[in-house]
Amino acid sequence: MKYWLVKSEPDCFSIDKLKRERTASWDGVRNYQARNFLMEMKKNDLVLFYHSNTKEIGIVGLAKVSKEFYPDHTAWDPKSEHPDPKSTPEKPRWFMPDIKFVKKYKRVLPLYEIKKDTLLGRMKIAQKGNRLSVTSVEKKEFDRIEKILST
DNA sequence: GCCAACGTTGGC
DNA sequence: GCCAACGTTGGC
Image (cartoon, rainbow, N blue to C red):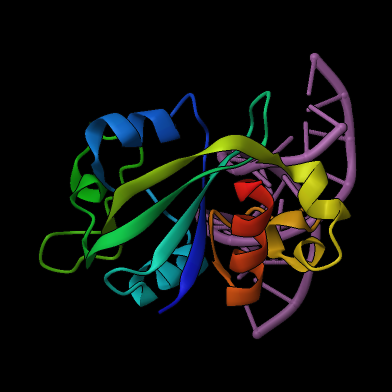
């Protein structure tokens, strides 16, 4: 089983919204590297949920993959937020998995704490200029995050 | 195939 | 609101 981290602006899609809706299709990703990670996700992989571009930046919750990748149909919907005319139902370019709410942590693990930690500070999320919205996480990193947030 | 210009992301 | 970092686009 693998571990991942997805970023989302809470104004756009928050952990509370995922909690309410229980399951969400992770649509709208239009970056090849991020897409490739989405396509690697296997059912039941665990996905850390991160809030970016907000007051309390950091890891806020946990989800898991409930459906492996399939075409992101919002790409060929001109009314969607991220239309891409080069992606068609016959030849889809963008894909998405479904993720299911697991839990919201009791507190936010803020980015500055992640950066301070010697182990977590090496995560992609902690590095300057990182704009990738989907990244992989190592088991030891995941375990450490769970441990920090469980106390 | 290079690279400058441009748009977007996202922390601060 | 600022700006650095990065991905994408398009002219050549």
